[in-house]
Image 1 (cartoon, rainbow, N blue to C red):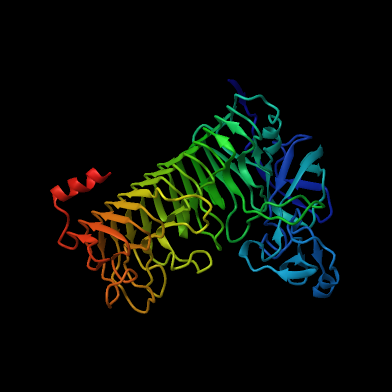
Image 2: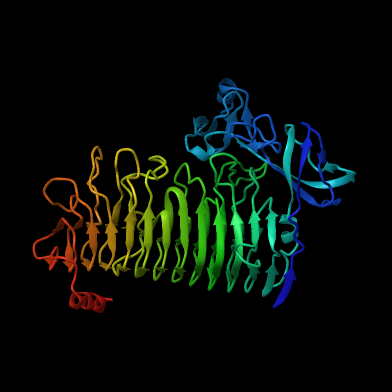
Length: 523
């Protein structure tokens, strides 16, 4: 394997530039040379880099109108075209010649963009840039741009090892290894090597292995995005090109890969942490995802597998300040989630077959719901559903030893999330605990529901649910453990509901050793 040690630079300084000028004055120019690339980060402008303002490098969308009259007069734009009004900062999208205002948080307002440019001349601490600033900025952070350093390796052969040194390395675009096989991109460790998008910068992903490939690996590094309330940027096409698409960036993306591996990685404030899509036997090991503020709107799952066969997520974690979509397999078959740990980060199997989820442990903290659009109170901690369809799901799956701890009500209404919701056939839940809180008014929910299943042939064994459910007759929707069709063995809760003949040895104290042995045999 050919080894390439990247000559990456962690150099950064501060600088100021006037509107429409190409002359950037920096505090320290020692780390820059002519033909290097740099990034001037948003934050020093009159708008301070806030959404609804213009950045030193411009803004998304590229197209703007002075006011409503000017916007309505332009009826000939392509369907899907984005534009903003300069008088309000609000973003609109054109369909059938009519401009429709956007309400989704991340593209409801014009977004300020950082300036990415090449240095074409240097005189002392004054750098002449290849493109001018759109607006003035003062004492802005200025980073060496490492995207061209990586991009110079794009033509390297299959079987190349790309080694990043220790340090924090800014990028203006993604590290894209298209159609490669046998590549291994890595740092020194996930705490020592970090690739990051400064505020106001984005692409589809920080690391993107897409196009048909096999045996690719990413390991021992951290990726950091800007999925924050302010300072974020979405992926979009360059100015002057098709402006009908917008995407939230990912950390690491493997698409159309076979036998790929993402291991010993970390993400901070990426809209999605690590994703495998249209892959075969492609897995993620020991990926830790962190959202320091949580997300203002639902975007996607942090650790996500879609339209894939085989593969496993092992020893992965998602930790979020607010409730968020944590880890999911979607429209896939033969997949495993093992030893997942989540803090305010949930689990989903959506239209999946022949799956296993083993030893998940999820804690939900007090007042962790940001709002109903980012995470609705009717969601569950573990959701097993066929919402999207498109794949046979008759084999079902096995959920083993889930541990769910409700550490506090999620909002001021004293709501708590249902533990496990099952809506598909042939699901087996073996062992596990839901540590809930007693129902408390004014919640309109039922309180501590450990399991609620309307799927056919649900088997629950050796499951314990703590907490007092809301008063009323037991139904599948008002019970600590509720199963409409299936069997409940050796389980304990204050309220258990099942169809006649479906409950065996339930509610009679904790399972005995002999009963536990019987449960383990089911595995």
